[in-house]
Amino acid sequence: MKDNNDIEVLLSKALAGEATAEELQIIEVWRQTNADNQKYFDDLKLIFDKAASTHVSERFDADAAWQHLKSKLDKKPEARERRLFTFDWRIAASIAAILGVASLFYITSRDVEHVRSMATVSDTKSDTLPDGSKVFLNKKSELTFAFNPDSKSRKVKLRGEAFFQVKHEEAKPFIIEADEVLVRDIGTEFNLKAYPDKDTIEIVVTEGEVQFYTLKNAGLNLKAGESARYLKKLKEFQRIEKPDTNVLAYKTKVFNFNNTDLQSVVKLLNEIYDTHISLSPALAECRLTAHFYEDNANTIIEVIAETMGLTITRKNEEVLLEGAGCNAH
Image 1 (tube, rainbow, N blue to C red):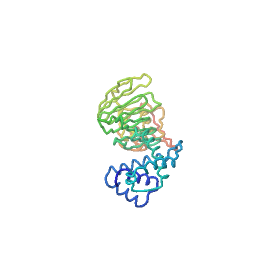
Image 2: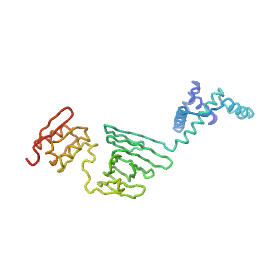
Image 3: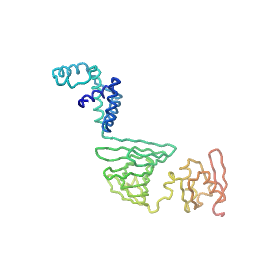
Image 4: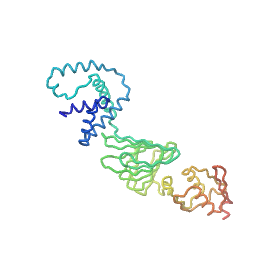
């Protein structure tokens, strides 16, 4: 190639589907020359494809534009000598029009380089975000991740509950927005529970450190093993002295019940396993101390019934635990 103008022409023809087999071969060799050439081609193709799918309201007079340009080029012998290839000027004009729209599209969309969205309904989901951070999304939750190359910031919007393992990068802040609350990682693993219909937003830090705050309140800095909640109505932060030992049960399927009332046990099992377990009134205040590790709901219920001398009645998907009550033991 004599200069960049020649390869630009060939790339335009290829993207428009007008290149010959010989020209495509030249492009292929050029692409394989180095990684920068390949990346340039990929970027140009992405812009071209997006522009082609974008509605363009302005009409272009391609023939008139190129006739005007051609008249100027014909007056410059050196310009004619540099051209290695000839092709239909109208095709080139169409390509130029599309690339013009493409450049406008690129300018308006380049602020967000990476965007990833995920959502769940009745199942949990794990995924790796474009920056390498890992997320485990609970049921009935949705998350959007965006990286802004200008501000060098990684931003997440969360509705629901998720466990994050953040790939810490000092120059690229990782910030989660959940309602009016913000969480900024400082090299962290944590669980954030922020369902829109709940009055609180709760966080438990399992590793590292986070800042838990709003734009109007500096909030709290929390380290591994610490937990806090934000009260939406009062707009206040509170530290939780005794974090729930089962806060990650939706992810790990590990349950630790320590003198826990049976009503709370059943409620948690129903939430995580989508079961329909109920208790006879006499059992609501019974207390359970037990540890379950990756057991299914049926196994857990059978162990509880055996331990506490209860009976199990099943009807379709409904499961009823009955017994004489704790005072009888």
